[in-house]
Length: 181
Image 1 (cartoon, one colour):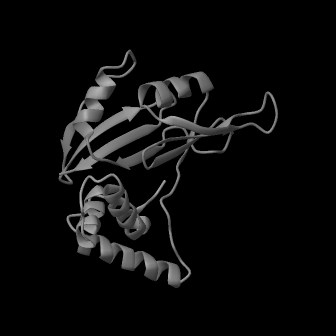
Image 2 (cartoon, rainbow, N blue to C red; image 1 turned 90 degrees about the vertical axis):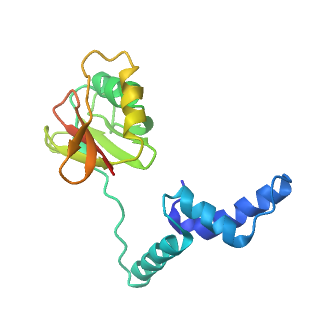
């Protein structure tokens, strides 16, 4: 999956593909603005500043990435029903050291990646994960349309100028989906 650090090559590819298909003649500046918008930035200058900050991090030898929380699970079937069927994550991979051993798996949706583990000591039941997002109303409608009788979340306005939807998985872990205004 591409991220904002690929913005210049994405703008170049966008411009070439639009031209190849005869859809539009887009200037280099216009293609940069379109890509900035796709990443949720108001304009190319803001994205360029983020690119410069990222480059500085890499040149200093330190570059922190988004963490991947490990959530404890106790039933593979219930975990898949909740995370895959209900929340719409996809299974990236799963691992067991051998048959009959605990399962460790990765699920993801868009840019959110979670590890789910049956291993004792991996995560504590009752952990909380804060998930920044956009489109909380559409996500709420999507969940409401599913046949999942154990959950009926609402959206609330929270003090940090955002709207939040809190869900608890079958193992007591809390997922707080948060959309800033």
